[in-house]
Structures are given as structure tokens and as C-alpha cells.
Length: 380
Image (cartoon, rainbow, N blue to C red; front, side, top):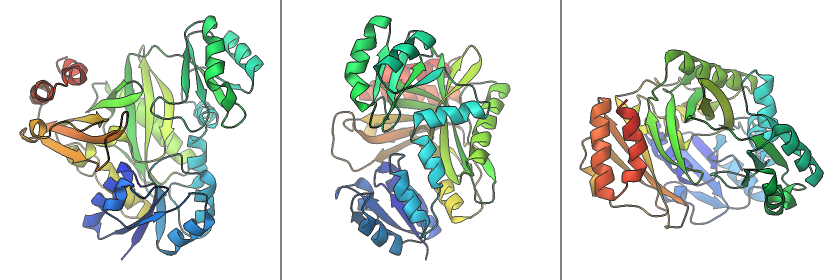
């Protein structure tokens, strides 16, 4: 029986383990905390990702390794790759961890991106703001996610505050300044590439964020065929350039009919959670198929789907479960402000039926504001 090792024991690892059960897979998890929620479904090794003794114990128990979040040290993935197969490869992980390297790769592949500049010191920030203009966003090059490690500079008068907020990190994780994009829509391509180079993608997904954290995802996104093909072409180019194996997400801004790449997530992705019930093959099972060298599953949709994220605390489940296409996912986490604790997916055969179900759920759970933008798109 094959054992898959996962670096990181959050909800993504948990859902990977659940999706691997029908394939007869076993799992081992390495995480830094003893209460990692994936440990409720698979044996958990507690240790630092840089601790070679913990890594060695982990490697001795698994046949192949992957990870569930992009801040696992690339050096640890590299150490493991000398001993066991690791997918995606450490190079892909390392590039995705550095916004400057990531944006440089996008540009080199001809994928449009907002203007950006490396910021090494305060003088460099002043020069970058002068070149790019305002509004713009100062970000840490590493370790930022869900809106963390960012400061929006609305005018030159905000530069001092931005440096006070993030400048100390210039020498440790690095900084990048990016032009602000007044986007009309946020889209994502969730795609998978197998060991043999086979590439598949799920229908394009439209996303809504609140305070930098994903709030809702709708699939399929309402886009024309030309835009979807451009998005898929960008994702395929990235996958081939990185010799990528596994699932990844390419996050995109849509502005005036143009797609601008925001970031690459080298893992299964929050905006692909709807695939569990809304696709022939979920992103989680296809990730496992890819890293194991198995045939990839069909990514076509089953109807229309919307995923709603639960942040901080879980609402009452009954409002979702009474819907014919309602599906509930509790991650088994302790409630905490800003923490992703679960999600729900609503699936229906038509956009109108999905809009009606979302309206009922929003009213029942007091989440009218969360579902309103999705319902508005479905009504167009």
C-alpha cells in the first residue's frame, strides 16, 4: 500500500487524505503543531520543517511527498527530494514563495503582470513609487498570504507609513512594490499536470475576497471563450516551464478585457474546493493521481457550483444541508478570528437554481452580503 507524505497538516492536507481513501492510500503528516487538523485523519509527526531528524523520520515512512501550503521551506523540500520523490518540485515551490521571482517568471513567459519593482531599502521604495506611481501596494516578497504582509500606498504621503509597517522586513524576506490594479473581477485557473506532462484544467472560477481572504467562489465563471483560452494558455505555460507535477492555481485580475497574473499557488487551492462536489474529479484526487503517476481524472463540471468560506466561526449547518445540492465541510479547527474553519458548496443544474439556493442560504445564515455578489452575477 502506497503512503503519501504531506508537509503541512491544515485543511488542505485533511481533504487530500479524505480524497485518497478511495484510492487505498495511506498518509503521514508533518506539521509543527500537535493539533493540526489533518492529524485527525492520518498519523501526525510533530516537528519543525527544517529539523532534519523530523524530516528523516517522515521520509522513512512515505513513498512520495507533497505539501499543503507554499510556506514550507523550499530547502526542506530539496532535502527530501534527494531521498524520496517530491511533487511539485522544489524549484516550483521556491519560485512561488518569492513574489519577485514569480512576477519575473510571468513576465518572461509573456504573461501580463502589473508593473513591479524590487525594493531593497527606503531610497529604493521612493524610487519605485516615483516610477510606478500611486496607488500601489508594498508587499513582502515572502511569507505573505490572505492579505498579510501588504500595505496599500494611496498617495505619496503614505510612503512613510508603508515603510514603518514593512520596512524592517526588507533585509529578511525582501519587499516588492506592485502597481495597484483597479480590477473588475478576480478569476482563478485551477489546473493539474501529471508526471507524463498531461495537462488539464477545471472551468475558470470567479472569486470574491473580504479583507484579503477568499469569501466565495463561483464556477463556471461567466467569461467568453477567448478569455478562458488565454487563462488556460497562461497556466499551461507556467506548468511546462516549471516541469510542474500536481495541482496549482493561477490567480488573475480582469481589467478591460485583459488578464493580469497576480500569483501562483503551488498546491490545491481554496478556489478549487467546489470541485469536490461540482466536478467529475476533485482537485484533491487529481493532485494525488498526478504525484503518484496515475491517469488524471476528468475535470468537467457537474452543473454549477458556488463555494462559501467560513472564517472565524462555523455557522449553523442546517441552512445548507436542507438544500438538495448543499454540502458541508467542517475542518475540525478551534474557532479563531480570521481563521478558515470550514466551507460549504452549493451545486445546482442551472444558474437560476443556484441563485435561488444561495439566496435562501444567505437569508437563513445571515450571510446576505456574502452571497449577494454571486447572485448578481448569476442573474446576468
